[in-house]
Image 1 (cartoon, rainbow, N blue to C red):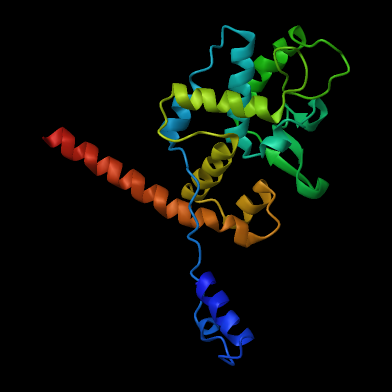
Image 2 (cartoon, rainbow, N blue to C red):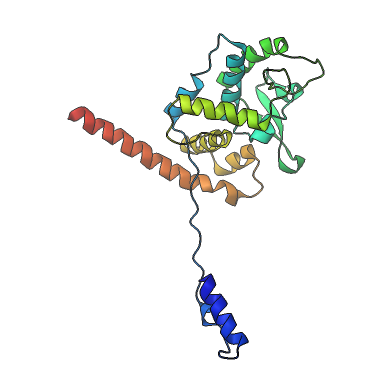
Length: 226
C-alpha cells in the first residue's frame, strides 16, 4: 500500500493524475500480539526452584515471589528501598513512571519469602549505606540486566515453552487477578497505568488464558479415558 500510494503521488507530480485514489484505501493495521502469561501451575513451578539453603536462593525466591505478588515493573523492583516495605502491614510503596507513587499490598507468601531474605541480606552487604532491597552477589544493588537473567534462568529450568521475563510475571499477576474476579480499575491502580485502555488488554488475555486452561483440562480428561 505504501508503494502504491507513493506511485500515485508521483503520477500527481507528473500531472498525469489530479488525486491519489490509494488514499481512499485504509492501511492494514498491524496485529497486536498478546503477551505471554504463565498458568498458576507454571508460576508455582518457577517459585519452587530457588535453593533456599543458599543466600542467593533465598534472594531469588523473595524476588520472584515479590514480582508475582505485586506486578511491579523491573525498573520499580530494582529501586525499592528498605523503607518502602512495611512488613508488618504487608504493603510496599512504589514509585512508577513520572515519579507517581502507589501503594501495593503484598501477599502472605511473598512476605514470608522477604523475611527470610532480609534476615540474611546483611551477610552480602558490602556497604551499610546501600538502601536498595535486592542486591547482587557483590552486595550492590541488583541491575535490570541481573533481574532479567535470574528470571529467564528459572523459566528455562521450569521448562516453560516461551522466554520468561520480569514482565511475564506482571502480565500473569494482572491476568490471574482478573480471572479471580478483581475489578479492572483496581488492577489499573495496582499496575500504575494512567489509562484504563492500557489495562484492558488483560480482558483479551483473560479470555485467551481461560480457553487455554479449558482446552488443557479436557485434553487431560480425554487422555485419562484413553
